[in-house]
Amino acid sequence: MARLIDLKTFSDKRGNLTVIEKVIPFEVKRIFYIYGVDDSVRGGHRHHKTIQAAICLKGSCIVSNNNGVKKEDFHLDKPSKCLLIETNDWHTMHNFSQDAILMVLASEYFDPNDYIYKEYS
Image (cartoon, rainbow, N blue to C red):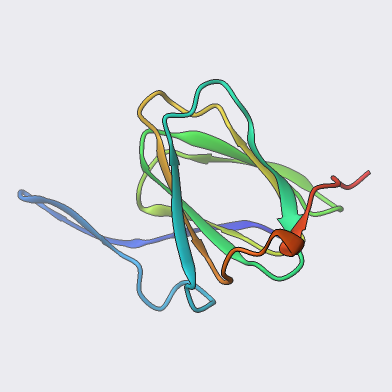
C-alpha cells in the first residue's frame, strides 16, 4: 500500500534544504517530472515491477491510490512529503495546482510492458 514519508528538512533563515538519503527503498533508475498540467488526470495504472516515490516540488496535487483492498487519496503539498507507490498500487494524479511540479523517482527503467492499465474491480 502506498504510504507517505517525511523527508528530512533543515530550515534556517537562509531557507530550506530537504534531503533524500537512505529513505527510498530502491535504487533509483529513472527520474521524471510532470508539470504544466491542465485539469487532466494523469497515471491510471499500476506496475508489474516498478516502485515509485512521488514528491510535489512546487504547488500541490492529489494522488488517488487503490491497491485492490483499500482506496486512499494523498494530498502532496510540500516538497518534504514523499509518497511511496508500490507495484500493486493503481494510481492517478489529479487536481494539480497551476504551478505544480511533481517529481517521480522510479526503481526501473521505462518499459511499456511493465504497465497494467486495468483498475481493480
